[in-house]
Amino acid sequence: MLKNFFKLVIFFSIYLYSNEPIKPIPLEINLDVKKVNLGKELFFDTSLSRTNTISCHSCHNLEQGGVDNLQFSFGVDGKIGNINTPTVFNSTFNFVQFWNGRAKNLKEQVHGPITNPAEMDISFEELIEKIRTTKYENKFKEIYQDGITKDNISDAIAEYEKSLITPNSPFDKYLRGDENAISNKAKNGYKLFKEQGCIACHHGVNIGGNLYSKFGTLIDIESDSKGRFEVTNNEIDKYYFKVPTLRNIELTFPYLHNGSIDNLEDTVKFMANYQLGQSLTQDEINNIVAFLLSLTGELYEVKK
Image (spheres, rainbow, N blue to C red):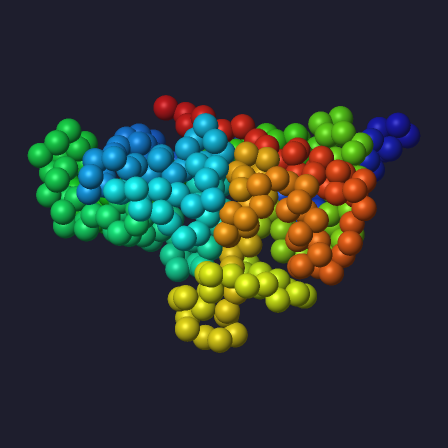
């Protein structure tokens, strides 16, 4: 009888898990370790910029949640960008890359910062010539038959970025069945998160990153960036942005595509009002923030 009871509990748990709108980050990921190691070197190397001063890591600091915690990032010659840097963590789970979705995958995304005049400001032709006679020549040839090319540089960096996942957050442990992994406050916050409608945009493995949404769904908001419109030139796409991931959100301030809010409490209040038409009490905000704090994971260790 007791055995049947436990079977029923397990079956019910599996049923509930399979219907959760948020899924845990996988504990393992398939990677080409040689490409990851090469991509890591490139990711941290400032010689990928025209002035040898900016690397991918300059804006995507792994000690700061995969961002630089600035409203807008600095590029070569002190140039300032015009949109908040999204986290590189768990970016492999995004359905497109960049706020406006102009890159369909991580490999395409690599092209943007390297050639952007306000970021690394170097053409791939110049970059290839620059690193052809360095330590990279043999390292590329060990992996890629055609050596150092634009495609291979992008491929290696993308493979490294693919490895930057953060499994084992307290909330993921909770989803996997550990009821004590998060506080009752966080559980109430998750319940509110679903009831108030936040889950409509923030769901799936990345708790975001899988659709576009209009900035200011219910109340029009002025924004210097026009979002998806910048790619399509279609009026209907104005102010539509890729929904950001909420994973490690406590580390990735300031928030929104324009980096205009620097704390989670105000961000939750703002989003509830402008996106959902909801006025939350301070207690409700605190509970949702407690849930958001449970989304900080552990940086995945690539197995050698």
